[in-house]
Length: 142
Image (cartoon, rainbow, N blue to C red; front, top):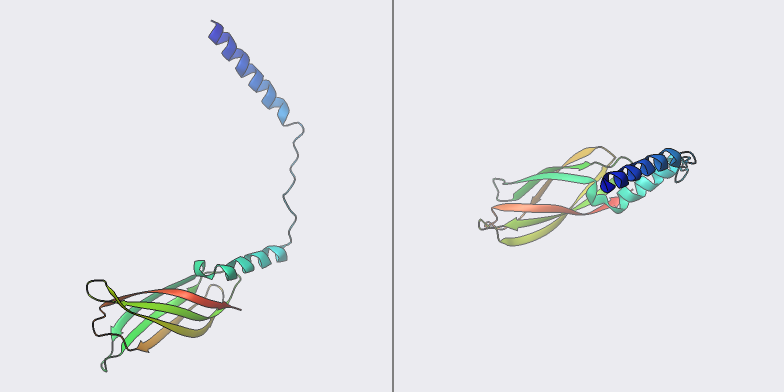
């Protein structure tokens, strides 16, 4: 019986407290930023963290004279920032997955927000290179 009385009193006090706690509440925004300020902050973030906004796909083949041809597409997923001069690091691997060569190549293109550009790089890689991986290690914000 005591448990029921205590539980009833606790429930009643919570109800009364919650009913009266909203009387003095008023909404105040954290800050009043203009659209220009928000865009500038977003642009700065996109430029500092370009690697989050640049996506790429690539394939590898050998041409008839023995060159390794790397072809692909670079996409800019940013909404406000443009980039140029993409530095791509290619790691060539043997059939066992061992890295046997690393090469950096720059794609000299300008990429506006929400746009894509294709690239084609001809290079000399070891004949033992059966696959590759790559990552974009640099891009210049403009």
